Image 1 (cartoon, rainbow, N blue to C red):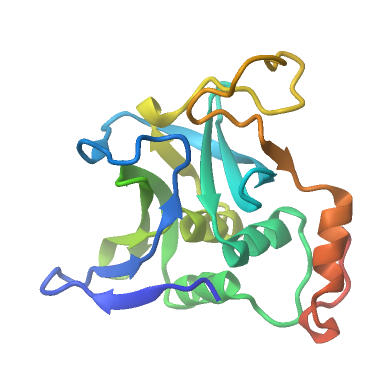
Image 2 (image 1 turned 135 degrees about the vertical axis):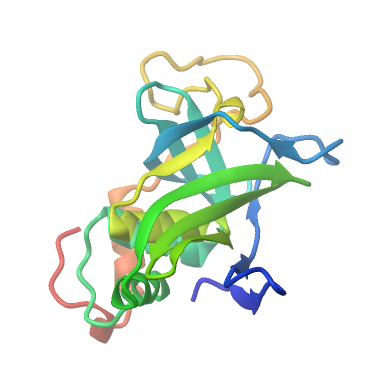
Length: 214
């Protein structure tokens, strides 16, 4: 399960809110004010990694037409859901985000895009823009859930330009090999290996999957 709580958001004309949190590392302990940006840049999922310092999962977004990055620390269930999708593993029973995909398409909707909207108190927020029979609906979501659903529906993902960093992924040829990591640096984030993926698969119940190619 993705750990979401769904509630109606008052008299908001059919708007629903999916409450949750995805973390930011490397930011000050207390943000002076919520961060928002009007300039959005399309990003793609470059890597799903493991932060060796915290043993937490990190999804790393990369601008589609550039090299800047946006790391977002996420929970294990969401990381596993993203991992399953980007490796094109076939399931006999749907995961939560597969169910979300089926609900959206089954009700005649289309996921137009997912926006990483802002960061506030060390937490990222996102919004899914759904086009349905009654028009466009904005749905608040955790970035991890939005990303997992966007991957399943081949929808574009956007992030504020000012949040993207020039930090290199570890292992890139031009990565800085010395010095202390700067705030937001990804020096301690390593990609999930084939062995880690295999270990994840071995912990799944056989009935959860049909045939698949790791």
